[in-house]
Amino acid sequence: MMVLLRHLIGDVLRQLRQRQGRTLREVSADARVSLGYLSEVERGQKEASSELLSSICGALGVPLSQVLREVADQLALAELQEAAMLSGSVPTESVPGPDRLGIDSVPDRVPDVVDMVGV
Image (tube, rainbow, N blue to C red; front, top):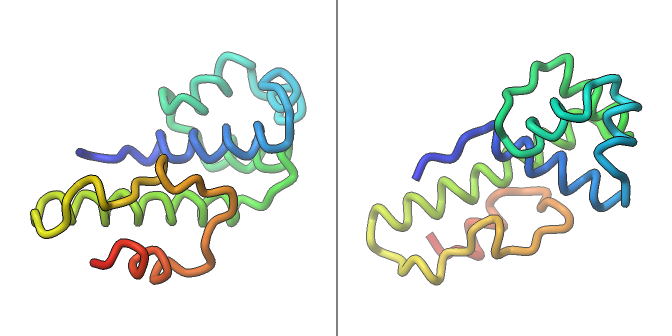
């Protein structure tokens, strides 16, 4: 299992947009990016440039650093899950993946997540 950064970025951007109750059309207009391109970024089909990410973050009213922190935390979870599966020391079912944690807010420290996993 290889986690692609563009998928995590897209997931985080989509979650932020949906939490705000905004449509793709609204955010794409505010970010001055085409609706289709923003949709592809959210689905992880396109790799967003740093300029585009900055524009989308501005449209969402969140700092780029917050988006990158959320992406980094989800990547850390995916890496922990992969390491646990490869080592065979922890049953796959007991390792929470980003989709099974129901994260609404990102933890301040990754070690909290490590403690939860027990690795």
